[in-house]
Length: 115
Length: 112
Image 1: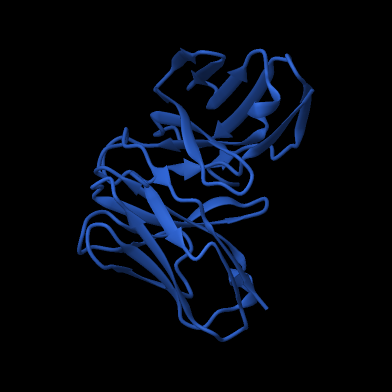
Image 2 (image 1 turned 180 degrees about the vertical axis):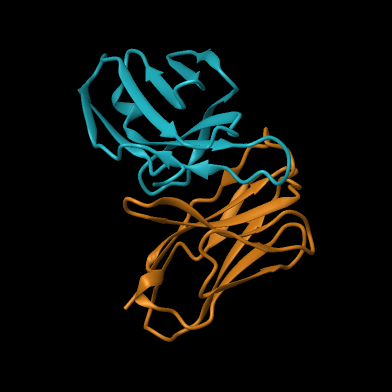
């Protein structure tokens, strides 16, 4: 039981390049989330998917797109990377996403540098 | 002003000390309060969870909520070097989608 997995672990991009961050969970969770974490800023929600087939914007969605490929997988795409998107990206999942007592489980993160 | 305020630290203490980590918040609708622990280069993991006001104890950890003051605390007794991590508070409102609001995290260093 791997929990939440993310690929790649590290990535360096040049400004304007595109890439997709992959996330998968094996806990049969309905809801999945993408966060970014920057020094002094804490965790900020980029996009989330309350259930398969739905996605919604979070606090900082500009410059990103997401795809909920199926119940297990939720990908984050940077179409034209900018230095401001240098960050650590975390994927998380939770069982239902509709109950405030739901626990989020986080992946190990992807460290992205945009030059 | 952010909805949840947390001093980033770092907080450096000797092994065996009692540690107090705190968050303040402005949204009186928050009812669920959580503490996550994040080791360096790892994802956050849920440490403790409380509902509304009061205390909750789990081993060396005690979470405390004071809704009248909009203030939550995490106490760590007999701190160990293995407790060195960043501690993030998070809170959410009842009903609707579960989207917690996170504090910025406090870096804790417990030195032998």
